Length: 339
Ligand SMILES: [Zn+2]
Image 1 (cartoon, rainbow, N blue to C red):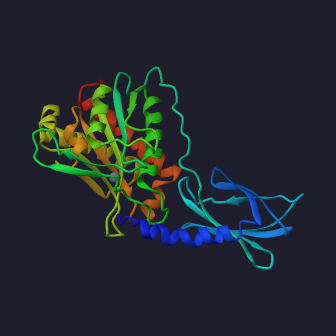
Image 2 (image 1 turned 90 degrees about the horizontal axis):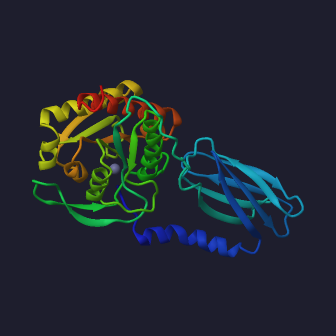
Image 3 (image 1 turned 135 degrees about the vertical axis):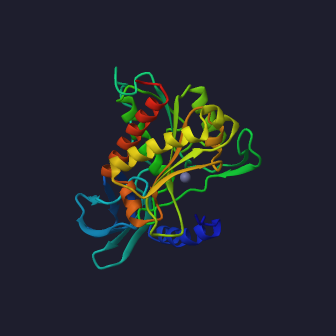
């Protein structure tokens, strides 16, 4: 998780800024309107009636020739493999190859995923689930106590994974999956509490556990994506707490582990992913502070190219969400919350 220094960011941005300033007189009124896996652009170019638009990011690149109509250029950049949250570099050149504009845009912050109506009855009727998409898009930094009955503090920052292929931030991917999981749970008749529904609200780890408690959650599922220096590593992990005072009050360690295994097995069955497994430890602050069964789930490795791309596909998201729902149903049964 290497963080860019301010100097490094400025060094990258300065050439872009200078080129933009130098060519500002030619390209005017540039609009960049994100669509689903595409971007509509329009602009005017003083003195030109044709231009070539080039685009690129870490996943794909292309170009198209445009002719002006009544002085206005318009076209659609198709980005079949690019997900919301990716950067797209756009360069406009004259038909003779003179660079007229070069800028980088973010395709969109996040797909809007509105909540669905709660089903009148379903497998999780009467059960409240707290869904916790990990991290957020804004800076956070504080020391938090590890947990009740545990020693030490944890320095909570906004350090998070970034996709090696997609360049998407972990906080974007888990929010997207979290909002879809919320809907899948509502369709099973569950009540759902979210710890966050946007990128702009900082939430500490202790606060995440408090939100679950204040919402009277019966079950608490926490969504993350993994990151490691071994680029080949893949798989799903489920982390359950071990020995905080609160964790012991929820269940003895052996029972807690069986809950974690029920969740992992359901996720493995739904996705076909067999690598990974259940780990029980005191490493995660919000796990230690939870007063209900809690599970920190690593949905795949953003440091692995295949996992990273898979995590943003509709197909894998649907399967892994179904696995989590099935696993939570099984835990609810083991817990005596449902029959
Ligand atoms: Zn994380």
